[in-house]
Length: 130
Image (cartoon, rainbow, N blue to C red; front, side):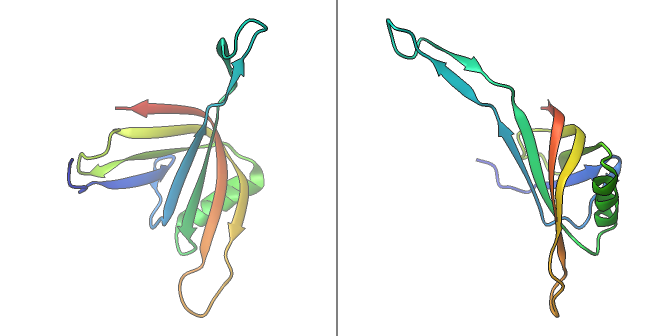
């Protein structure tokens, strides 16, 4: 097992989102089991897959304004997650294309700490570079 010495970066188009607190993708690939009168579990039917992700970005980042504008206008965008330094990650990059923001939630403004903005998004196309 390798010692994790890799830094990942998230890009919105060609611009690196920095700082970024969290990026959480979810790949949903549902299947339905097919049964028959003669036997159980004779096969399965693959349902359409969906890809969603959430990003948490400190409100001091320029990307918050960019993502908010994309959300308000309903504009499609692309996001990629790639190795910035190191080589411990299983992928060279994950690319999410034809993305849209489905909800944007700014955090409360407090006396201490930086406000965070949470963006929930979906992607119509995903590609993996190994």
